[in-house]
Image (cartoon, rainbow, N blue to C red; front, side, top):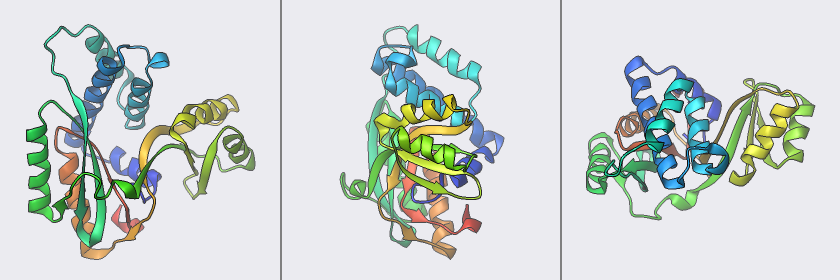
Length: 243
């Protein structure tokens, strides 16, 4: 969830069981194919949406062969293939948290019904467009293990807006259009980039713990399990033991 450490999110995703990992891979494949079709190209160098989709897939350890095959299938897709469009939804979770949901869907009625059902069953409510979106902003986020001064200076020189240091490493925020310039600079300077992707960051966070934290994670897990849902962001600030 945005508002909490991206390191924690990645560890949580990589720790998913096989069933969840398979579903996660399927979402990335859908996003890659949609990006190819919408961008009109299977070359990430000329298709920023595809470049973002590939970066997100690699962060979640989608095998390179799966990514390559998804691009090939999308490039060669016959007319009449399902057309997916990006639709976002907003809602409220336990503890007064804001939830922002990104979907890729070929049936908006089905998607909104599924999302509303999760909120109704798990706790929370589906909001109107614009109800919580103002609490988030789109950013590029990079993660590297190296916390050296040189790494930080390299990132700042090439467009980093904010750097957070932790035991895991550096979490670097950029404007979306500066993400890959910072990534290329760090890689060129010899720093291994663990993750680089466009994400939504909460501008203000809400501290959530105990039952509310557990209920929120249940809501987010249920939303993420929906086939049409690509990403779920929250402004929750969770204690480490709730990751």
